[in-house]
Image 1 (spheres, rainbow, N blue to C red):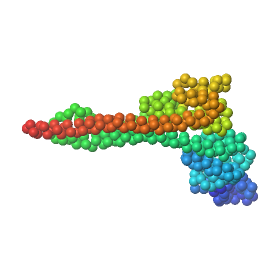
Image 2: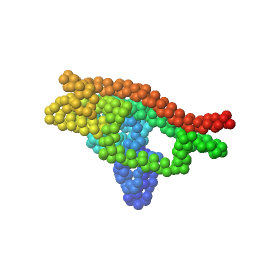
Image 3: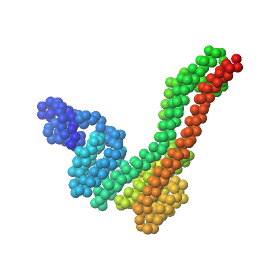
Image 4: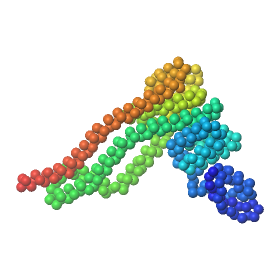
Length: 405
């Protein structure tokens, strides 16, 4: 139960009333007030303004909360508890207020006669098509607890893969940001002091020092304009990559970029195989599995390849043959699918494919780390060398002149 603060008008006396009440969700609270002869004016969740909106759009619901929801619900159902009672128990145990709101709405829909899957489908920002399809398959086969367990496993694996890829990309970004910060600090604080020394002695600066001083003066004079410029450029780039053509270009860049291209390809193959494994093991039909998996991979080019393969499968071609020689798929995927089709164990072969690429992803991340570190060291050495040259050359020049004199 959630606590709501409401403002209502008494239909008999016309008096306006503001008080607290408990209900599963806003609709249930409104019904309860109507039964008591009150006309609701405003109903809001106490101490959680707009949390229902945030929950509805998935802005505040973390992946680990959804994983915990799936596992706890699976355990409750496996223990023999009815679905609604299990949902209420899980709602009481979760720390996520937005998720509590969503669960309460799902409970209301289920109690009104809707299926669990259709109730979840009303919240697509929280429960994606993979989640809903697996729940629907579990309901139809009477194995909802197992379906929820598979969902939790799927979410954990996906989150683990994404975290590894992000970790591999964040390290070089942090190092480059630190290098840029050090360079700006040296340019704007140390070099101007060297210039002042030369001005006092009426000497001309070496070229490299003069060049870097010009950059420093530009940064000091127009720092606000540079911030605005970088902000505008960043906004335009982000806007472009959110567009249809930009999204296609971005997805293609991920697949073909030097060093990171192989990393993303293996991540996509692992995600495709893992999602397909979960759906196939749950009894989802082949065409439906391909449609959902194409969306789950989150790359427009791979999705188009999957949809093209789906059309060929619909006309009677084997899935392995449909994906064979496709440039958006690594060769091992159709080969493993062919073995699964021939042996009648497609889900197991897909799982082995997922495990293989997940291990390959780990190896790729280690390889990238060992490759990027020396590259970053070289960049750092070049930057440090330029700074040292710009600062020390003038000093050595002055020392040499004083000795000569």
